[in-house]
Length: 441
Image 1 (spheres, rainbow, N blue to C red):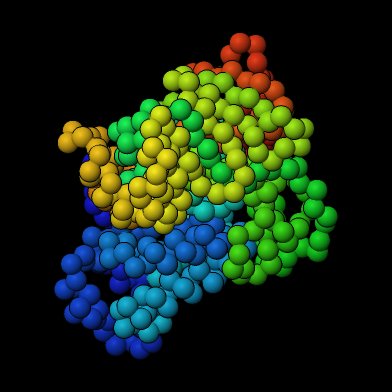
Image 2: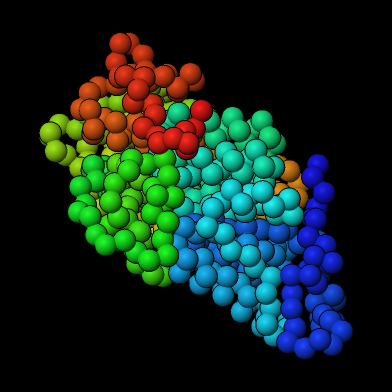
């Protein structure tokens, strides 16, 4: 088991500065705290857009962590993240002029730091696999945003690297740490609405090829490094917004960098479908394209147990069973039995589960906080609630859905060996083009 922490008191003092040359003394409340500075996990953050700024704020408030480095290819974003960290610790410690957060343009420099225990990756999707695998090789534990990666090949390569180097990996599909989704999946898994016949997963449509026009380059942005493994193309602010933006950029709508709504929201809702069906280590065996040529929904997945999962428009997950149906979304559950609405809130659904499920019901992994679950597993060296294998299987389902839209072919799939069967599909579809030197082997 890895030592709990290398972020020593000496390092804490060295990375903190005061305005005066007087002897440096940490306030007594810091050393009296439940988690001492030398017990903290040193974290580095890679990709400082809107999502990672939110994650950074959450981890800063965790007593067991210390943010020591941030990385972004855009100078404005990395400097803003550094300022956030240093202002937070200055206020927390009462030490003016705190300077304990390093900034990096290139993630490889951050990963080379031996004092960093773990990294939080929230770059655009096309970078996830390469950086996560490099982090695993550098013996860092990893929190990586969803969707896990850009291809089925990349997903398996990430699992292999995490297992080879013994890392603790949390996929950022944080709905697994929300009570309503756990209750919903426990009801489904335990026969609460009868044998499942079909599932509707409502998320946005597939991605499209990028056709954005060239714009004047953004000062302070390393555009070539932003592109990384993706095809070379001129800068456009839709992909990497100017300055410190507060929205979620639309790079996710383009095939070179994301998978559209199918992977973006699908990494949440197809994940819940997989969880409810007990398919975290498997997937569908057949995929049918939509009926219309330019359809944005309608792809159907058939599992080995004959359950059909259908991609629908809108947002949420609906399980259909022999005795009723269940709809779940963030903060919402509705359960019907025999045509009657029996629960219309998470609290009522939980009470219903207590009434109708057997005493020996299967209970799923319980996490109340996705970030805390990861941190606890770093200490215990156990798999977290959304381990890399879970993320890989979910994103592979999403990619199969997109492949059915892109190629409009019926596909037969072997989820054990992760390959097309029956003369369908093309092995080349299992991966995406990658520029040197950023190829995932």
